Length: 227
Ligand SMILES: Nc1ncnc2c1ncn2[C@@H]1O[C@H](COP(=O)(O)OP(=O)(O)OP(=O)(O)O)[C@@H](O)[C@H]1O
Image (cartoon, rainbow, N blue to C red; front, side):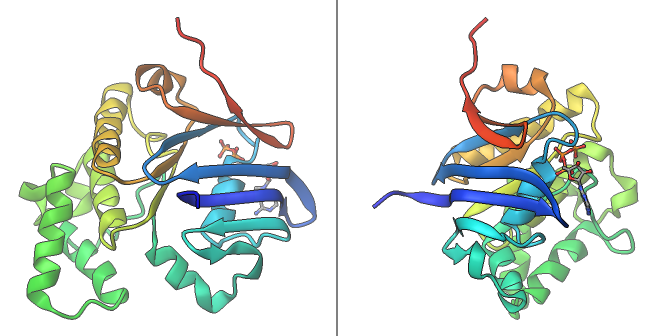
């Protein structure tokens, strides 16, 4: 039995009637850190969206954290998302509430009730990303890098089996990108599986890892050259 948290076989991904990726066969094993690279428009976001249920898988087979993507129903999506942690380029924090209230909001929305347990969990995830001392701040009082760390903490709340990060450093300067990357690498070293879409080749060179590339409607693994 393999330890795959994600497995696609001959999957085809469309945006409306346009074919974006064809005949995709990829696997991600528990504990891996995998990059997804490719030019603008190559289909990275479309691939990610298929994985978190935002785009239907119309052809081929796909299994992610125990969900069958080809048979995924609208009502299954919240349950799928609970087992995934999704991180976006633009953070997507709620600006009208503090860091801890952003996190509490997600816990409540995913069925948590006990106040003490929620507090402990919020502390735990903020600790992991080095943001525990800023839990009373509002997102607009934080730098981009700090906001992204909070977004990563939010993704960790329900102990996801897989974290999908779509260009998480896309809005950050190079130094801050490295800091956010260090947080993601630490989380991975602690056992979390991560798929990260990026076009930041400097980061890939600095932190080499398994790399999948989208190109000409295909996804394939690339072997990094050592320089
Ligand atoms: N909602 C949509 N409707 C129709 N076509 C779309 C839609 N979203 C994206 N596309 C098309 O799908 C293709 C892949 O886009 P996608 O956003 O997946 O690429 P990407 O690799 O993530 O690019 P980027 O790095 O710019 O985010 C592009 O040709 C794009 O124009």
